[in-house]
Amino acid sequence: MEDGEAKAKLKVHVREARDSDREAVFEFCRRTWSWGDYIPHVWDKWLREANGKVFVATVDDVPVGIQHITVDKPGEAWLSGARTAPSYRRMGVATAITMKCLEYAKSCGVEVARLVTESNNTAAIAAVQKMGFHSVAEYLEMELENPPMAESSGSCWANISQLNTVWSYLQVSEVYRLAAGLYTVLYHWYSLDRRDLERFIENGKAIVYCAGGEAVKGLMLVDDAVASEWHENSLQTCYIDGDFEATLNMAKFLLAHCHKQCVEKIYGFTCNHPPITEALEKLGFKKPETKAIIFEKSL
Image (cartoon, rainbow, N blue to C red; front, side, top):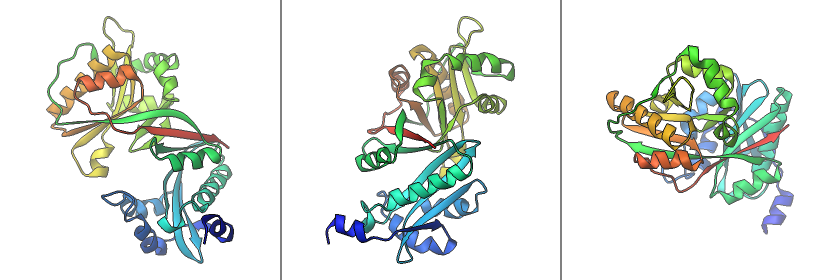
């Protein structure tokens, strides 16, 4: 049977996931990557989330695809975990689930939905563009193992008295615009608003560069959720803003902190901006072969 004929006859039903879908879903996720998939590790958590849903596509009552959606903030939703059984790809399954997710999001008052895909996943990019999503930012996941000791001057952990100054800095930042005003934690992108910035500062997870005076010339937000989620002694950057000098200095400050805390790996997430990526490369961070492209769609 030709793909077009199969697609025409395929009756896809989309519903909320059930715990009983587990075995069928895990089976078609087994070979997502060479090492498997993270879906089995998050399945139970996803099904219990108060702010999220997992939708399953079935054919003849058999699960053939899934997608996860969370409503993180009023008006914003994040789509992730899109999987389709190999024998049902290119038959409209992924599109059917995504449309159901967007329908749910709209019922929750969501105004914008976002997702991420790798730059080499041409099929996924074509599919999301066909559904009305457009790219808004490119991010790189750069990595550094065994951070060495480094010296910096002008960088420090931000304190809450600097909140207004740092927020004002972001409002006129070219990097903030290039990043579409987003930050990331665990491959999940969120809008970076004033309350988020305040939380990062209060939790001691914001580094600022203020060389030569009180004016803020750079910002780096970090988080250690990767350590507990991925069961390793690691840390990630969530957002980096500044020119080459500012980034180099803040990154050295972070390296010194990680070295003292015996952190074994840093995931340097950043928007794809040469002054930033070149500064990280200078310190030994490795660039990935692909980019993470963030797409969004207004509802």
